[in-house]
Image 1: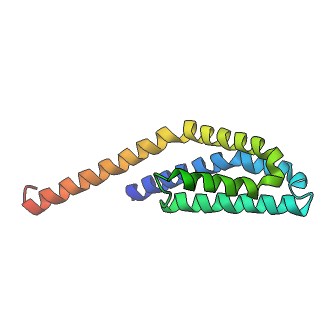
Image 2: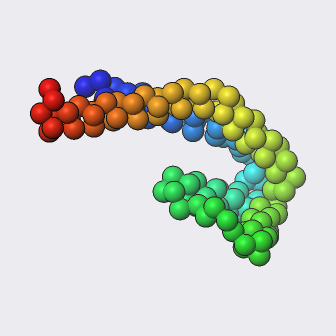
Image 3: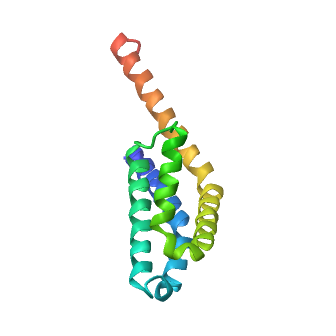
Length: 140
């Protein structure tokens, strides 16, 4: 039962970290929603940017984000992303700044607690393995 509580607490920390990361961007989009959808091309840009963000987020969650990309792939990705959000480029600095702020807040608030919970889980696994080995070898 203690193990499940620790895992639940770790999941809660990850959830809090994620929500802290995206909160500033979501807030700016909500406040400026009428600007983002004022024309069809701006709405398409917003949807395209959101789709790109969801794809990248999905890749990160699944652990499929490549560690080393060739420079051509990086520039191709940035080019496609820039053209996709071209009509809302005037707001891009604000959105990126908000994303940076959210990520910084998440890092500052959640990195240490998440690392501590991971160490605790690893420690519990090591203790369980040692106890199992002692039981199997007949020492207990």
